[in-house]
Length: 312
Image 1: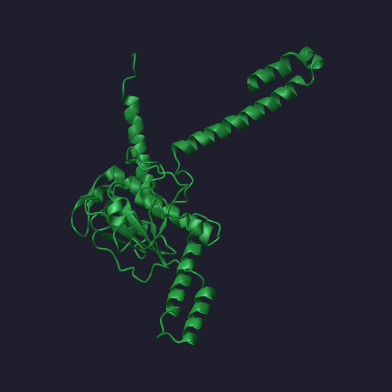
Image 2: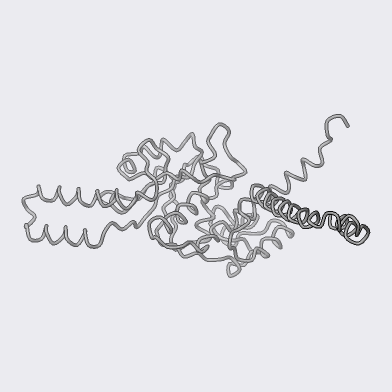
């Protein structure tokens, strides 16, 4: 289009004299079309790679490991790619110091179904990248949460689940309920009870721990309905969509993989509860996930291009 305008400008002065506004109008239209095309291309790229805007540490170490192939786990001796999903440590050709460490504002407990295949689970990513804040338990092993339901929530899309923005309100209600229950206990001195209620009100609810279930969606109800988890406040991530390459057929795209659920919960908690602008603090939780996503997507795209087209 630029060449066409140049030809018109330099090769036809007569036309320019008769219609002096033709070129400016065409230029405006072309610029508008250019902007629209770029926006469309940007949207298309974003839909193809929803993880493109993450603020990640260099993944060069993973590129090198992928090229060199499987390596040995320094703890169990198993042959793995990138990391050992049994020991939750990087393999020999992925130096620990080249893996980012993510500081989390909350403790994370992951309850893994015993039938969940370790090699297919993304839960280990959280343990690898935030080892001081993440613990993984295999069901029926569950930590003790009794008496802590005002500071622990379960991320699960149940019928009573709430959104993250309402977490503080519901935790506060639980604190107040505990205060009322204490009032019925005649052994508690009135002055001590009043002091405790004032302290709780001034301090406000404080979320300390978040529980996630790591299993196929058909197995989650067994764990979520366990009496040790049943009383916990359930939180649902309603606006996030998965890009997991093992998305289960027949399930909505809001059903996330474990590492996606952890990541998106923390991002939303940061903005909705802590009321702070998110600046990529937890993006490195998707350090392995984003790399594997692109690796698998590229392999699939190459496979599709290699298939013969109908009619050829």
